[in-house]
Image 1 (cartoon, rainbow, N blue to C red):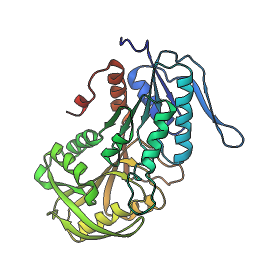
Image 2 (image 1 turned 90 degrees about the vertical axis):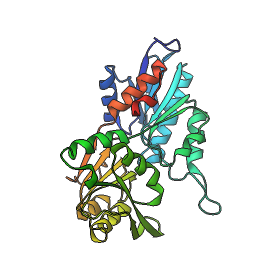
Image 3 (image 1 turned 135 degrees about the horizontal axis):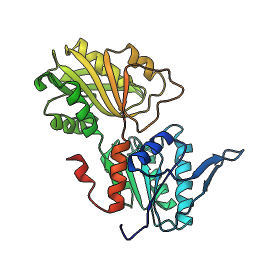
Image 4 (image 1 turned 180 degrees about the vertical axis):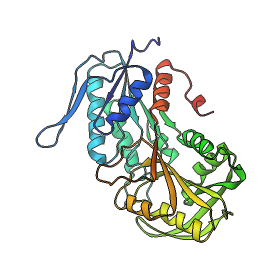
Length: 321
């Protein structure tokens, strides 16, 4: 046992209770007894029904849609644990909302990712654990340790199994835009496959126009790789260009966070993409119809292992070797 606490306690908000339960099942422990409810006027009410004094507490809460509500739940859960004398509080945020607002792109823009980081730190969190931040520099927005887990190993294992009989020279990893080149290159290197880039111009928000494909994808099995799928406009436009312009054999897509807002499902259904593989950092939106093209890989085993390593105070980086 480590000296900072007598045991692990894991609690969850309302954002993704199923993931929290799966993490606990992988660790062989029980999910903490707590409720996160709301008063009649919408205020968040948190009640912990077991002691956390001196415990190593992990609060699992992706700040997905509705982002503000789930962020506020997390902040109040942190405050409740802090005031109950928890030994150490780790905010486990599989998907970090506001991550796309990480810089000023024009005059008088806020940097909302920094503001969210400040709120989490000031609420009393001692550590943050997340996955595939939209921009790695967001780790520097926090004045506390941040563990940014990588989804690439999970996707790599899946792709290697799916194409176990294929020649790796016939598979190409493709970045849907210039901003995702770094993470796609890491993914391609892990698999030992080639890399291509879709170069596009974005005339306005949530709309994109593909201009060029950098790399030879003709006759290849293409894996579009990104950190998130929101409205799926960029993804589906890239897939169309890869087939019509690049001559790709077939298209698959991998993304860590499936936000799937607006007409995302409709676009995916109409696109040439054969399969979209997502990690379950965010639950499938209840408002969206079922899509047979979408497959989920669980991140619960990885988060369970990472939580255990944080508690035991051993390296997390070895998870990705």
